[in-house]
Amino acid sequence: MANLQGFDANTVEPADDLEPIPAGKYVAVVTDSEVKPTKSGTGSYLQLTFQIIEGEYANRLLWVRLNLDNPNGTAVEIARRELSSICRAVGVLTPNDSTDLHNLPCCIHVRIKRRSDTGELQNEVKGYSRRDASAQPVAASQVASSTPDATGADAPPWKR
Image 1 (cartoon, one colour):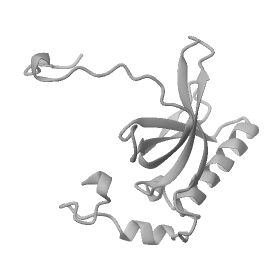
Image 2: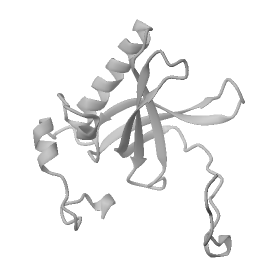
Image 3: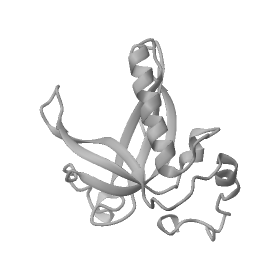
Image 4: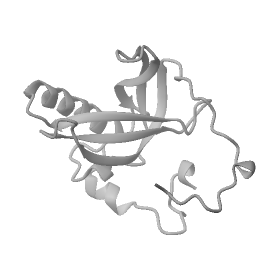
């Protein structure tokens, strides 16, 4: 239960019914990352939140789950390969922490798939590529040292 005292729906626009975005490539950044336990409790996955930062679908969020700790070796191998793709796309080849991947633009390749349980259409991130192929990879230590100050002066444009 949550205390909602002081909330007035008359003063807030209701949320839109979000349909899946069209399949395609979108410029996005990782805005959040969190390790969560699997439903079975026998492992954990890294959940990454991607936010589209350009175009008609700017600010839309998509989530990726990477089974990095799982009794199924195939699931772990798939997750490690996907993480490698993400690292290469953002230019951080040896991250020390998932936050090293935050706020670095890359292209995410999005498709639409039908959920097996409800039949509803949903988005799925199926690939990653560099936003600018001429950019050089950066070390995780360089990313950590470029954290914006409290005023946001060094923040990327989509964070200001």
